[in-house]
Amino acid sequence: MTAPLVSLRDLHVSFDGQPALRGIDLDLARGEALGLVGESGCGKSVTWLAALGLLPGKARITGSVTLDGQELLGAPTSTLERVRGGRVAMIFQDPASSLNPVHRVGTQITEALALHRGITGAAARAEAQRLLDLVGIPDAARRVDAYPHEFSGGQNQRVMIAMALAGDPEMLVADEPTTALDVTIQAQILELLRALRRERNMALVLISHDLGVVADSCERVAVMYAGRIVEEAPVQRLFDGPAHPYAQGLLGALPPLDGARRRLSAIPGGVPEPWAMPKGCAFAPRCPARMGACEAEMPGDIPVGPAHRAACLRVSPARQHAMQPA
Image (tube, rainbow, N blue to C red; front, side, top):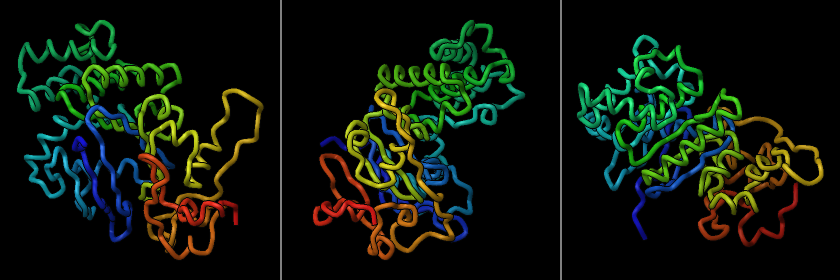
């Protein structure tokens, strides 16, 4: 079996003693597209900010994050600087706050080219134009000298993708890359990411609230809740038969595209705050299928099928017959 490109093991993160991540285990293969889904506050972005050493100093991080077998947690700053933007790039959800408003976009791209590939001068400008053209910015030769405020939201997101590609990364983390974009522009950005991944054999982590986006763009999906992965499966398997009640609830809230109309279901309550985390399963207070053991015992990962696991006591073989709401 081929070794994963990136491997996270027992990754914990806390802020001021309050847990944000509670033991993340995750592998990503070369060229693979992984979707990371869940409500706001579940730890999706924190997982990858921690992995890349981008959290503030007050964050306490334990566990292991390896890239091609090289440990990143606790690695020297010089090592992380070569990895970030070079081997692993990240697109943040708000390009307006990620791009520097007082520098031309070409300048910002050429800085990345100089840092990660050693390209400077006229060659860097030509490469910046090529990258803008690659991501679909019209008239790239002229617009390389434009400022971020001269671009639309969708075009600024394309500029962010061009900057991410400047280091020729092996892996791209896209954190809600279509937030605040209209559906037409969303589709264009997602198709661009799919095309770039195919052409470059680049691994992709797509963080999203939109399950439809993940279904259309990823091969595998991990569902996060309260700082843990509660279910992981090939994308089609998860959509055909989610095992964890939280994943079932997320899918139940999606409107059907065909067939009879039905009332959408909602998950009552909200994600628990770190300082008020339940003793057992964090989802138990909101779960329609909870039982007494759920509130006393934090479930481990239980195999559900090929490459499919879920952290729920109800899906263990001995309890599958009891999948009825309490």
